[in-house]
Image 1: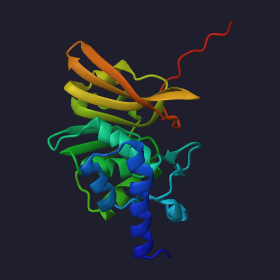
Image 2 (image 1 turned 45 degrees about the vertical axis):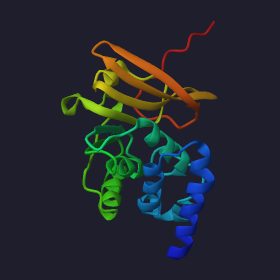
Image 3 (image 1 turned 90 degrees about the horizontal axis):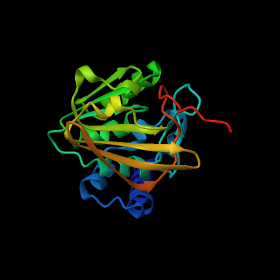
Image 4 (image 1 turned 135 degrees about the horizontal axis):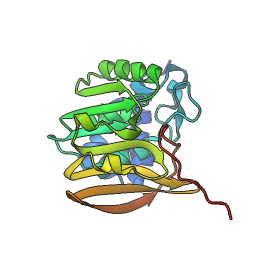
Length: 223
């Protein structure tokens, strides 16, 4: 059994040695990593890995993981949430990223295809005292148009490309972040809705992440 002292030290090391060097310098995000305890969101069998710089397997499906702490933190930072924001997350996993976003925004709707994981995330969030996240079991690849529009959308995993149907669910001024591309080269992609009919895209950093389920892979042409 890990003592609180061990966990506090591990959490401190995670922030200082993994997250901060990865250009996560937003004081609010760093503070959240200290106050929202990641060990509450890790499957019991992997508790010892809670603050390690690695992906942690979750759920029953192939390739379902909790992203590394630095990637979760960097994506949350780059989304630039405001206290009044209404957020959509696709891929709840264990609920940790939703928890970080909930602390920075008004409400989070988080979609998870795996019923068991969705249940686990609800339990984890309640245990962490977070009550402004609604976890819904659903295929998130189409978003949740009837609940939108959203100020921010987080895809907590990688997709081959961002569907237009999701971009259409952003308010003007809204942002979407995702890891986009094909192995071995994927990029963190931040898309902002500039007007009703235009979006601007930046790709601030490289990162690989497992695929979110439900997103259509583009057809590969064989020559």
